[in-house]
Image (cartoon, rainbow, N blue to C red):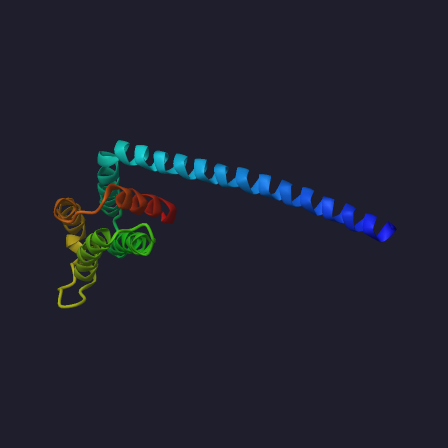
Amino acid sequence: MEPKMNELLLCSMNNKIFSQLSFFNNHMTKYIKKTAGLFVLFISLFASLGVAYGADNLQDYFNSVSVKVKATADPVQKREILDKGFQTVTNALTVVENLPVTTQSDRAGIERYKAVVQDKQDELNGKNGYARVSDGQLNAFSNYVVQNMEQADVVITISLVTLLLIIIIILLIV
């Protein structure tokens, strides 16, 4: 008689454990759905509030690089600051480009923007058919880059969420 009682007791315990796991699973699923919903709401709100902020911050980044260049007397350091600035933007663009949430049209815009940044970096260093920017022209070149990137912002279209991701990654890298 005792083995059957143990089996019934064990079966009852298994049912309780299964019931508790099901309860836990249902609540976790609801929690995850609520969290995902809040996340989407937050991103939407963040995106709607940040249209100008995103574009301005990317421009602010290029402006800050230009200010650092002008504040430095040594041409070697000026060139390094510019080169590092280009590389930081390129790295951020690459990270965002490879995110699963990035759309195909955003990827195309990112590729075009990366090409503009790469052209400026090649021009700075005298690569791919460009004449190297002379040491005496580095301040003027940094101004030119800021103006050129402002124009590239108008021509190359990427979604706001992608732009904000690029800015966040630049801020994390710097």
